[in-house]
Amino acid sequence: MVISSHSLSTWLVIGSVALLSAGCRTGQALPAETLDSPAARLFNGYSKPNVKCYSCHNGDGHGASGPNLAERVPKLSDEGLLSTINEGPSLMPSYRDDLTEAEKRELVSWLRQRFGKPRK
Image 1 (cartoon, rainbow, N blue to C red):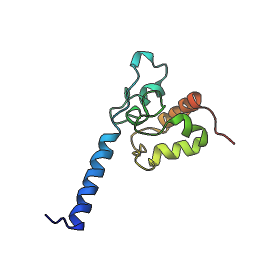
Image 2 (cartoon, helix red, strand yellow):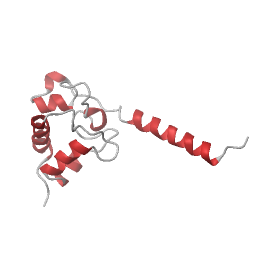
Image 3 (cartoon, rainbow, N blue to C red):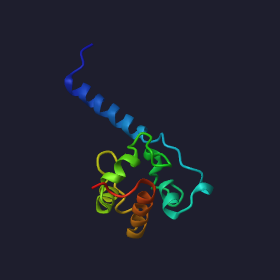
Image 4 (cartoon, helix red, strand yellow):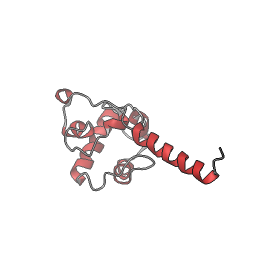
């Protein structure tokens, strides 16, 4: 059986998309009763059904199939974090239209509280 390069590349793309879309489903939300802030509840998927940061970053932010935020957050300014939330770099979806400006600022504040200020 001969497989053309076109059909092989099509199957590779389909397989990659399937793996990537399934990949960000390994994180676990922290129990709602343990969360002490609206931003923590938002991050863990309890406030808005289409905002599930925990699914890639785990409920504690230390990474699942997505990056460990303890390593990423200190490298970014607050504006950089807001840009990340709005633009969704790489495989991360954009949350520009899913979150209010106040919710985005709450998330940034919560991330800072958990993971520290930007390194200089």
